[in-house]
Amino acid sequence: MTPVHLAGSRLALREVEPEDTDDLLAIYGDPEATRHLSFEPRTREQVQTITARSIASANAIPRTEYCLAVTRLGEHRLIGYARLATEPQQAATIGFALHPAEWGKGLGTEAVHLLCALGFNTLGLHRIWAARSPLNEASARTLLRAGMTEDGRIRDHVFVHGAWRDSITYSILEHEWSPNGVLGIAAAEHES
Image 1 (cartoon, rainbow, N blue to C red):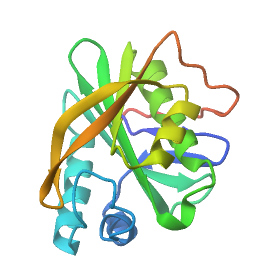
Image 2: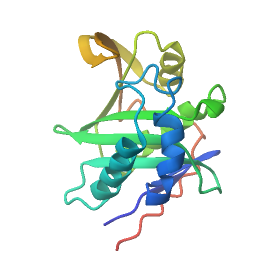
Image 3: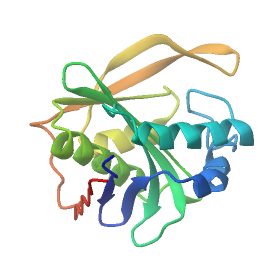
């Protein structure tokens, strides 16, 4: 197992731990925080399952999913959740969610940069992509500020809140990505 720890100027990504369940529930159980996500608010049991799956994915060989806690730099408490799932052809999809108290501070852009650093610098990927709800304009701004390009629309992509919803997709290629001084990458990866 190779634990991931990436540090930016204000945030860090680390492996999820069992103790993160309550903080993750504060995000995934909140109707406002999940309003634009691809699922409805989660129960405690569902979040416990997400925590367990996140921990298990860190031990998978080969590892194809990186489910990580987003923390403030120098702190341990989870304030968000970030995910990178590899795909064939040196590609991956990413997603993230922050606690509503952290919205509007530019932290989402840094979280995307950290996921890109993991994908491009550590995993040697060629392409990373993300999808957002058409109504989530804040996510659109975040993905564009992070250097991604809008690709298009996937019609009826997810079934959520009792209806089909489209997704707007974005991508970035390895030669387009630059950390722009945002990252003080301390990719402390230790073999265990």
